[in-house]
Length: 316
View (cartoon, rainbow, N blue to C red):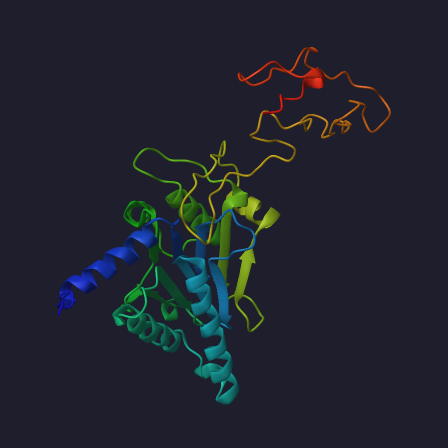
């Protein structure tokens, strides 16, 4: 009788933690910064369809990094929980702390369970108050730990390098334009040198307490984002990553092909007419010369001479 393979609980948890950390580090960073009028979220996200930053409730926002399908399930669960609690009780009963605790329980249960792999995600849950002192930012890790962040926070990618840049340049009570400039420069900062991230590769959203609507979440994109960024110099294309939420595959050029035998004309986009395999004439009625082999006798097998017509000899 074979003995079951034994792994100590300490080693099992270490392996699961290493697995989750490696998956999260492959993605692009998400930065959250407190400014005078609320909380700012900035991420390098070339995808226009997959969002890393979203709204949960009136004054609550959600940001994540890691596997898109996993943190999207968490986002949907948070929206449903907030809607049910606000409908059953009161909208004021929906708080960022309550959602952070619910997420912590879910992530902790998944991480400690041996039946499935841990989630490769980290989350931000932010809530703004009537004053800057009442703003709250919670950071949740893959294993369900909750940390209360202040002023700024970074998760995913090269978080240590980005956080060091924010620590050196952060200013309390900055304007929205200054906060965006700081966050974008921090995302483009690296040990090998700084780069300018294109505006179309940025996902920017804020919780703005100055809005008169009950819903304080809004996205900043297009010309409004360009006006806030100002002149930053020549832009640097982003490098591909393995993050599921922001695929890093290079865009394909319409009409181009990697196959040198592709008959498509990459300049005009037209395709040469098809040819008849027998006559060599094109379908448009124009004859196209076709190379044919020179006529000659068909070689027969070594057992005898070839018969007339090129047919093989018949064995007696």
